[in-house]
Amino acid sequence: MDRKRGQRLEGNLPIFPIPFDNYGDVDYHSIDRLIEFLLWGRVDGITLLANASEGFALSDYEKDKISSRVLEAVNKRIPVVVTVNHYSTRIAIEKAKRAQQEGATAVMAMPPFFGTMAADPKGIYEFYNQLGESIEIPLILQDDQVLSGVQLTPEYLSKMVRDTPNLEYIKLESPQAPYKISRIKELLGDAVSIFAGMGSITFLEALERGACGTMSSAALLELGTIYSLYRQGEYNQARSLFYKVLPFIVFEIHLAPRNITKEVLWMARIIASPAVRHPGPASYDDQTRAQLKRLLQDLGLRVFNFSSN
Image (cartoon, rainbow, N blue to C red; front, side, top):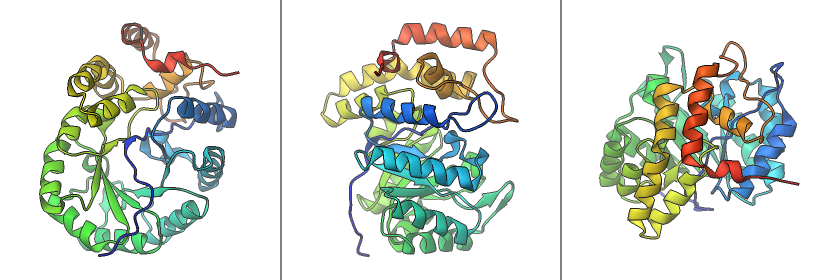
């Protein structure tokens, strides 16, 4: 099928965390400062309203307002991917059209599910097909079996890519993602581009199998440098930097997954509070925060070099 190719998405497109104040209200001043930080950090794009953004904790009004604010502030200087997750095909299409109209580079969606209720394979296929037909910008399929409970095989994904208008990217979220990348590439070649996820814990292995980038923590600017080094053929330097920041990724995934990005951005004085919305835990306990501080002192992350007038 013919595809409209626009601006290519690649590299580090971090998940944009939505800052809240201590009362649970959206902190728009911190959103503006976070945009400034990410532009300063030369990220390759921004992923908005995703699961790690706490998109599930926002009202539709808040999602629209945040999306409009970020897209206007970024002003197409870098790509912005807007997540349009919803169980309803109709509403996902409405969200996608709005994002396109306001200047989004691409939209991303998970297979429709609600708790243990998920669409069957036919429903998932039709969901993405109708979503892709409704827009002219690229569509990204987020494959997260752990969260959605929906298992999509490489063969099924390959058929969807062949049949779905504008389905140009897949974000794979599983520890076994590198194997899946290899099989999809075997079936499709360069017909689809694949992003790593899962905190980037297998980012290096994913790159070696043909991944085009990652969508992960907004506090870990080093992921963009790793990608650039790898693409420039500086494989040893890319590996060295990846192994340097790997303890951060391990801490995030296995030791204290909730809110690590907000904790670090708060420590770096980029956002005013690390709070998440109730009933999520408001912050780390003192011991966990002390452990994280020790780790950050050893790593010397770029996030702590940011300052603005």
